Image 1 (cartoon, helix red, strand yellow):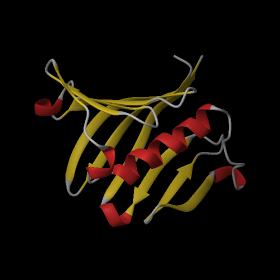
Image 2 (cartoon, one colour; image 1 turned 120 degrees about the vertical axis):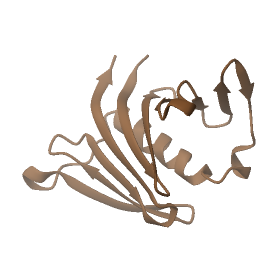
Image 3 (cartoon, rainbow, N blue to C red; image 1 turned 180 degrees about the vertical axis):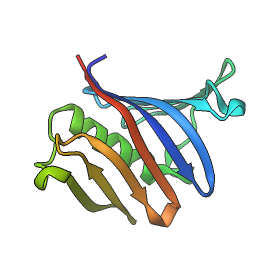
Length: 139
């Protein structure tokens, strides 16, 4: 699949999660939980319209607007799709860049390294941080 792949260390409201993610050029964002053990194998997929959750052989398609993290899912999808398409910000000096923006009612800070690749996402209002590891552009 073309796009950007990465591992994510997520801290959300005091809990920690490890995930593997892919943002494809076609606008599909997928996330699979690796840790904690009770969520291992949980998969989330968002294509811009449909939001699908898969776990232990069950599939559920909730209304994204009725989930607590609708803005966050959209934010991650949009940022990763933009990066996958090569729309990386010009780094500010050798330390990279910080993008401060808002999606809907949600403010966020997005940190990029000197090459313009993602390092960290902070969403203070959601008590959410995402550290990006093993980031690669897939072809």
